[in-house]
Image 1 (tube, helix red, strand yellow):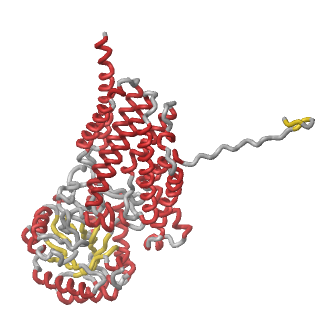
Image 2 (image 1 turned 180 degrees about the horizontal axis):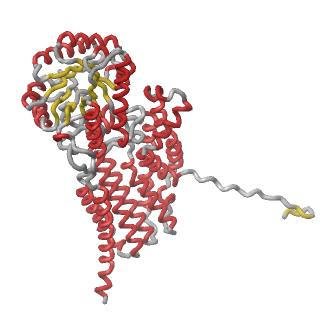
Length: 574
């Protein structure tokens, strides 16, 4: 009888763990089922892919250009995925590209990179002319400049001079590539190019387009360009020189980066191209970590293949949003088992409902920690970013441990030791300070910044858990557990930052050129811009996160002192 009774607590913990793991595993399996991304790409090959063979550690910003072996390997890798490659420069290590393209049966759209310096531009133009004339069997089309007008690197007349110079010197068709609105703004370009090359990126539009409407948006823009060209007496072929969808990064309006959306967009675009008979080029063959320097996480994740040259998604068949979900589930289970082992003696004393709730919270913390580590490491593109990731993972792991100690003490009707209370207080002050910094960066210049929900999920959930303990009559009220002398000020800054983020995101839409053209008056544009802001689930999740962080520390109104009433009866004070 004694032996049977002594075995009950361990069995109780075991059964609760199995239930929690089964529930999590079932949910993870259900959320990560293969999804349909539309009709397969014909023959599994695209017409054209942007080709920038930069490997890890290489960047044009740092003047570390691709090596010949990189170009050879990458051309071989994508030869079964595309018929044509588009390049953006003829120098900077790209000189061997035509030879490797020929070797692997690839055609080229060769581009010259133009900036704001005439000597460099002239050198690039001469190199382009020489390469196009030397490799006419491979170089089928020539592109003079990429988004020069968008960047405001030169005026339209200078650009046209470069286009004419190349047209006179090569036999291939010549074009200029820019966002579609640049062609609308400078219709004289229609007459200068042999074919019209426009970039249509629904995610980056001044009015971002949801994936469900992205293909229709492309169709609408192509018709607008055709109509504009005909209005100036031009009827020329159209090439969508860049189009694609990011697989990771910040949401804009209803435009959500994801692996499935990236695959779906490409397949939908091909259906539109086939119906209307225009050509297209997908951006891009490989993820480009160096682009995160200017465009954040989302700029680095437009590739068909990742930086390790592994497929991000297939061009045929169903698509998995997270192929590594089972491995991540295993890591979460391992972390939860470690936490259970550390607190095993205390957990044996808990009644079943409280034990189940504790183990569920432990598993939730473990999931958050694994998601943080996986996403942050995959999107860390420099040594300092990797150091920051390791620091945040360690800080979140420490906070999760302190929170579990507090929750276990509350469940067991105990007062936690003072050192743990002080450590938790300090941890929350640090997390709140960092949240203030992140919030105001997003408010003032957040276009390329991701919403750091994963970094603050454990702090927010921890406050919620402690609040539940308080509501259930436990001994550790949420505010007392994490209060600090500076927390009121931080709470005020976080609360004010909510309005700052909404205002900053709204302003970023309303100040964009195409948005102003479509909604010229403030009264017309404001509700539209606010609508895009309120569609952003990532933004709303961040606002909820910082609201939870701020609420327990918000200054409480002081109780009013009751006024004393001086009542005198027969001269005596009562």
